[in-house]
Length: 76
Image 1: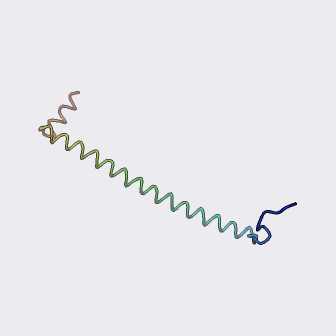
Image 2: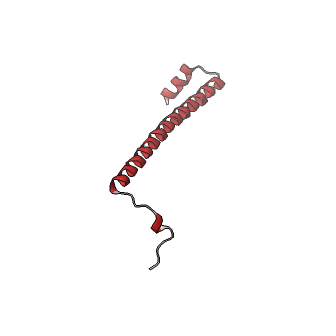
Image 3: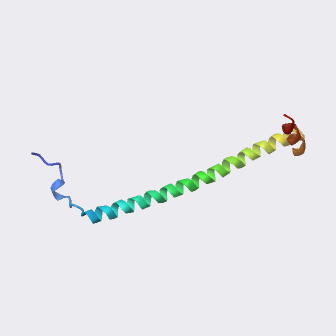
């Protein structure tokens, strides 16, 4: 039966070594998830800020005060 190329030269890792490797990979992935969550949080802040700027610009361009706009919204 033919063996896969290079199989005879590949050292076998012990269970302990494989466990350590798996734990290290898990830690690395957890750190990546944490970083991605922080990135998402910052992007949501930016999105909210941009939406607020659009609203403020629309209010300014309308010529009305913020109180007048709020009163119009509350009447609806």
